[in-house]
Amino acid sequence: MRSAVEERWLRRFRDDDEHGTTLICFPHAGATASFYRGWPTGLPAGIGVMAVRYPGREERFDDPFPSGMEALAEDIAGALGELAQRRSLVLFGHCMGASVAHEVALRLQEQGCPPAALCVSATLPPQALVGRSLDFGTDEDIIAHAVGLDASRAAAFEDPVMREIALPAVRADYFMVGGYSGGRRPELDCPVHAFAGDEDPELTPEQMRGWAETTRGAFRLSVLSGGHFYLKPEGEEAALLAELSDVLDAVASGAASTS
Image 1 (cartoon, rainbow, N blue to C red):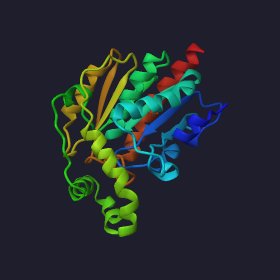
Image 2: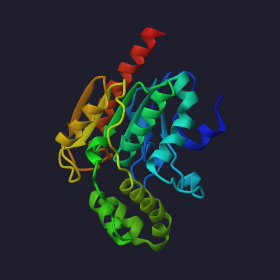
Image 3: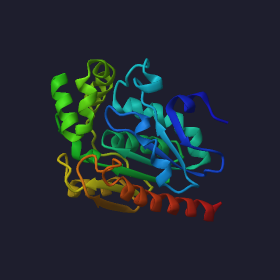
């Protein structure tokens, strides 16, 4: 039975009771669950695909923004708790979403229902954030940074109506990222798979390799062609989904062999 809290926090792109293995996607800063709406077509048919609905956008436009990344992770882990008891969850997050997914994975592990795997994309591991001070500046500075990473977002900020809708979520997420201090965390028991674009101006593939320190399990780094948003349809989305399919198939096979 689907709980009200699950329905508030999850967008279900492909989901029924037969999907014992489910991918949970975490959007990047300023993004929405809809970013992942096309992913089911590129992933195995027997895998559930959902995305997290952050407050302050789309159907949750009137909900207050999170007070911080840890508070957001607490809420999401609470929403996923029952689902994690019934299914094998694979968490995927891009940029800010990777940090949120990692914090959620830690909380699910603490609850006794850890994810089957964590997949992180294009963000520094938490231990690399210690002592970092981030101030993204004014709204114009934030917009310039966002557009510098993804030129397709420029149109949303050039139109006054669209800017009024889009900017508050972008601003809130940038402030949340700036306020996240990271640091050493307990090691995860599940495997961690890291993904990076080989031309990402924000970080290098070698820096992504630091995610190996977040798990007692297996670690794998995949480097794909492109910049920070290598995972968009016009980039290496198909290659990423192929890699994720391998992860999901391995989890599903393992779950089937132990059931």
